[in-house]
Length: 315
Length: 293
Image (tube, rainbow over all chains, first blue to last red; front, side):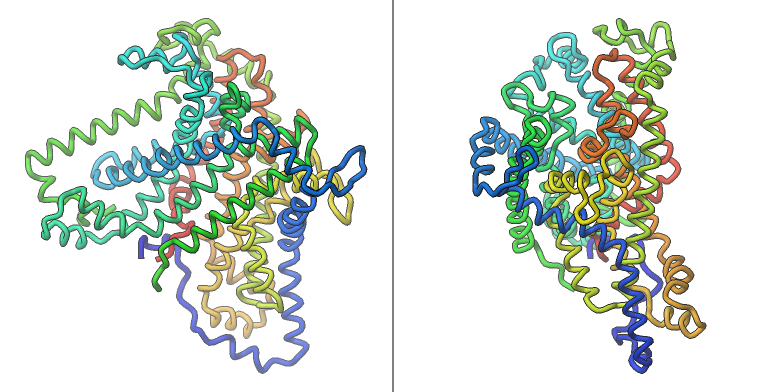
């Protein structure tokens, strides 16, 4: 109901399940099943090694400890160790803050931009390419750019621009109070193009009659957005909400490149960075696995809540 | 978009003098602001790569390099070894594409059309992994790469460490399967009556009609390999096997700001060229995700 499907197959099939194969001889059916399994093999092997096994392995690892090649069961030790890491609290706080701010900036801003762009009869194509440009940049290249833009003190380019327009200078990632905001702004600049284009596609599926009717009823612009635009795009809005939260909770490259990983006084450390640090800086794979299990549980609970609360698609 | 369909603001209001004035002010404002915000940094990067170390650090920044010098670009190419990094990335992306699309198409075809026993069970197990993002599993995945269970291989620093996980993409399977479901069975039966086996049917009937969705999945796959960071950082620790995205970060320490910026520009060129060529497909593909008519 929201957008026209961009791609559609030739035609809808009938519901009747292959009556022709029913009457086939047994060897034929066996061969068909075997072919089917052979076709599944490659994917199943990949999933087995890199999706299903790791899920089980992560849980097992979080209750084990491997030292000098010897693995033993240690109960909740890994969880305790990770819990007592001084960066544990800050990492959760930073992750929540990053996700929350990224929702305000990376979720709401692209929608507003898309609504405005959708009104434009000129320059729309140019603007669409423009917002999408950073998305094609290798993320490391884009963040290295921000690293220089964010130079603190009067030597920084952004600070120079700030003082030129009369804004106070900022320490950006060098000051705990502005670290996460700076990371989110860089991340939003790099990533929001995709969201803008998805919203635009969905906005173009809204029938003009609805706006017409609302206008005749006397609804102003904001009320039309509230009563027509948002309800008409709510499926895609709610899907993007889930994707955005899940994606931003895993932020990693931003603190690593912009703030050297931890930032000042752990003001940049995210959960994934903490996991990386335990596994590869402190040689504590098991502690990292325990943190991974915690993050997995949080994301599962979030996804479950989302599925439970989200608007159902009426077919 | 068609100019005739009305949107939030009615055409009548836009055509009034006041409406027109507001409209044009807004268009010009948005174009100027977004050009500065999006092209500005790119411009600063490209010209920054032409400046001397002293000039690039200068405040206020110079709009044009005083003595444009392409030397930084050459330094970046050799100092960071960008040629090698690009070749690695292209090689990984090509293999990942083959695994993701090749395995994905055969698996989705099997589940959708051949319907072997347990096919739907396997599908459910695959889709269950959509709930758990890859980053959460990097630790056990890394352990798997170092020592694959049963076979005992160590895939560290080999392309397989990137190719095999690419084959385990539930979203690809989901998109392909949903598309294959909409191909009428009569079409496949006709092929069967003509004597085509499942392989032939897949290759000559299913793949040709599914080209649009396969294109979308292919674009997703290549983009993901180029943009991925954490996973290649972990599984390609050797200096000679890194991807562009990881390499420009890892090798940038100790280099001058102008050289690093030049490297970032070079790293961006291939993706931007590919984007400009496939612009329509990429922008169209974006909207396939979860939207259903």
